[in-house]
Amino acid sequence: MNCPFCNYPETKVVDSRPTDEGQAIRRRRECLRCFKRFTTYEKVEKVPLIVVKKGGNRQLYDRNKILNGMLKACEKRPVSLNKIEEIVDEIEKDLYNLMEKEVTSEKIGQMVMDKLKEIDEVSYVRFASVYRQFKDINTFMEELNKLLNEK
Picture (cartoon, rainbow, N blue to C red):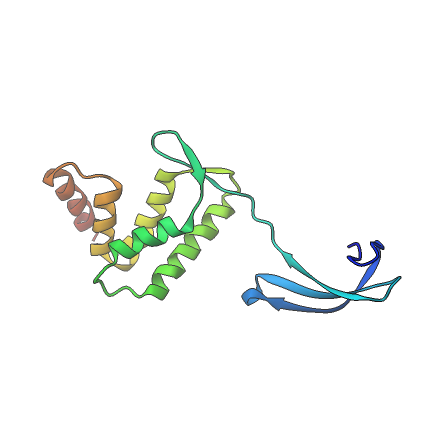
């Protein structure tokens, strides 16, 4: 790390502590030539994740889209905001653990439906009806029957 004051390439770490709820490390450094101190932050670099949509176009992953979809599906249901955020965190972690640069929107949608099915069946059916674009009541009933047969 070069000193920002004299550009000398050697510094020593004087103090380190976690910040941002453990997502980064704040380091106080001291230049070995001019002895001035400065602060640096160290974070894990996340590789950008690209979502391949049904039509083939690509866009950057946006966790807020998952969060908003789940909020709509869980509206007026006994599912807390903390639980929804926890699920979005799990899905995001699983997506990055796939170690793939691109993931399909279908894969993400299925992950959301699997999680919703575990916590609230009504929210699951709401999300599935929008995600799978049920065309008529028969398609809706097929999904409900699948859910009942799993029990």
